Image (cartoon, rainbow, N blue to C red; front, side):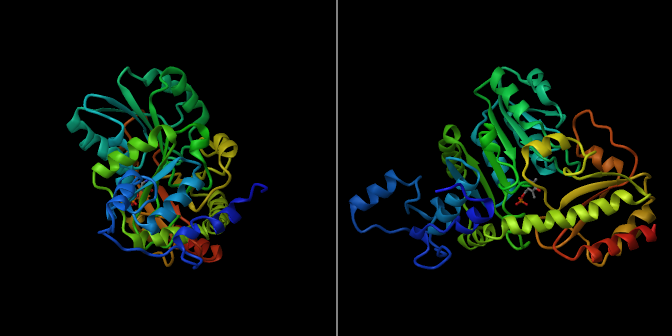
Length: 394
Ligand SMILES: *Cc1c(COP(=O)(O)O)cnc(C)c1O
């Protein structure tokens, strides 16, 4: 069969007839106990419990198997493990591959809770974290220590949106220390816009809470690993008690079918808003990977197949507390909220010290007030009007 396009792939994905019982979608199977009539049946389930065979609720049901197969295919991996949240996916993936007294390298613009986990939990195991500039490239070689076990990436980085030179970073690590497990938080790309495992990354992690579910009504995490890492990831996560409820997994699987279409509209909308912002006299810089002056734009063009609705912008000047409040408090469409990836637009504001608090490498932001926006599926005329009113308020 000719290679199909992503839109078509995602219409078909997650619909293995083994799990659909003649419906278009997989069944929702809620189960804790799985029961066996014969000893032979029980032995078979035990032997194959890691391979989509019903064994015990925590190992997943047909609903989980359908979504896990879909994500394994989408991210070109050997298997997929599910977690109750993206944060759980990150922490469990890291704990699966590191031991006491070892060392981890983490990108300096990693999602803030990822950094907090390293600083507050890994330190209890005497695991040392070194944060690095997301644009480090071959410089990563100098940071690898004899006890470095994991390199943790995220591209584009949270809030400041730097795109890694992924192939260079991976090749540099492999040349120096092939055993290191390379992980990436791939939430921004949603498994569609970037395929990390095709760049020889070992584990691709996502918060399915964001674009995969896509409707701001469920929490779910996942990690897809290659052949080298899937067994360790699966068994360690199982030992740590990770599981996800089938109703949320069903919603995530359903979300996959409209994912490329939603991402395309988010991209169109976000570029319209980003281009408008670039023309504003108050704006110093727009941090949108698809725009030319965004950090790592050349790597984005080379490695990603598109953008989405999440980006940031910085003003030329620092807003006073009153201006900051007036700007953020009175939007009609942009609401303040952590998270993103739903149908609705969101905004968060940061002063320079807020940004510095989230960065533990040599990072010196400009003075201007910073905003991160998620551009939803509203009409951009309405969103631009909303932003225009905000500028008028300051
Ligand atoms: C939201 C987010 C997470 C955490 O996901 P939850 O499902 O909210 O736990 C992880 N990484 C990134 C980049 C995120 O934006």
